[in-house]
Amino acid sequence: MYDYLIVGAGLFGAVFAHEAVAWGKTCLVIDKRPHIAGNIYTENINGVNVHRYGAHIFHTNDKTVWEYVNRFAEFNNYINAPVARYKDELYNLPFNMNTFSKMWGVKTPAEAMTVIEKQRAEAGVTEPKNLEEQALFLAGRDIYEKLIKGYTEKQWGVDCTELPAFVIKRLPLRFIYDNNYFNDRYQGVPMGGYTQIVEKLLSGSEVRLNTDYADFSKKNGRIAEKIVYTGTIDEFFGYCYGALEYRSLRFETEEFAEENYQGVAVVNYTERSVPYTRVIEHKHFEFGRQANTVVTREYPVAWEKGLEPYYPVNNEKNNALYLKYKEMADKRRDVIFGGRLGRYQYYDMDTVIAKALDVKKNELYY
Image (tube, rainbow, N blue to C red; front, side):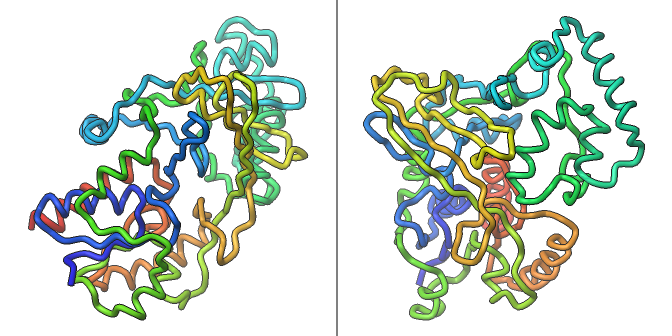
């Protein structure tokens, strides 16, 4: 018997395991993948730390979380400043004065505001009913058609007119020359990759990889006093109300015998005709000077059972379905549901850590 069976060796499960072990609890951590660290897993390919499941930049305004994660790795001062490519045009992200200057030749915030206000008025949208109308209402036609439309339609697999307006409740427009994608006070990437963080968090716990929870539970029965479950909540309950919807991803990674492939860590491709959404050159996350480089193309994929569920589709239908599962989950005193999949929410890394620490307080302190 263990005190906790933790399903999923990602960030939520690893943080909880670390805290539980520190309180003298015994933890068995299982994961269906052949490695720990979940979606933040990084592997070294000829000296380059590769983010296997897409770009992960740590950012937070929570000083407690920042100090916590820095106990397990040293972070550099990487600032996320991606580039958007539309045909042969390159634009800085997020939308700021560098973007507007390149797009319209304007030089001052007043000039940029004038162009955007004119295009908003021409769109004639007063009460947006879908994502397209919401984007036109907030940013005007040029920004929508060049930098939002194609990328969003690839990401979600449907036309913008079929997506609800709340997907982009607000669209930050910065009228300053600032390419820093995040406004958070603390930002960076761990030198040496993320896997080391999870390795340290899991020290003291027993870990079994290539282990599916459903098969494991059938063979082992009640092996722990409690379960910490970070898989998909609908699968846990046997899809009794039906399957929740997700979006999945496919990655193509390639190594090149050159020092610098694209000059920046992330380039977003905003045309719908380009099948991938972004190209990641991993060495730039750690300011690498290797003679080689590793590049990943990220393709959105329609999710089906058996594929990795990366993004919950939090529309009204799915949120209502999730609440049915949550009602069942709330009655299970022997199971703690956590992480993106267990809570059916898109969480940044800092939020995952904060929620794991909150669960620790409620579970271990009282």
